[in-house]
Length: 147
Image (cartoon, rainbow, N blue to C red; front, side, top):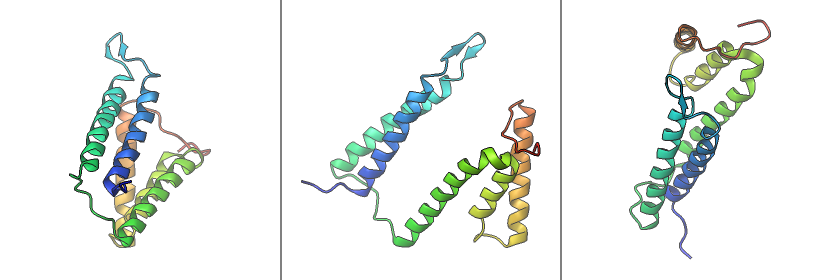
């Protein structure tokens, strides 16, 4: 039996995510009275992800895989980012959007910039996203203190 390449496994992972989101997108209305509904965009994006994942899995299986083996140091970085993302999802309901997003960005940029510059970038980015969503009328998760 032929051993699956890393690209095949990556394609399978994206296919699983695409199918998961495709299933969830079907729970929302495709149309609304004024045009596309809340399920329109997720349905098309997840559907496209599923199609591209299947194509990539096929290309990888027939030997046209462009993926290379991931080095140990790069794998550590990827794993750390995944851990940050899981922590973000878990902390968000408790700490609210502003604090959680600031901490997430600060952790992601920790080695790239000095502490002061990193804090400034994280604070400005979080504030910009917060005010953009506020202007659009979208309620973001708040903490117990109301921010």
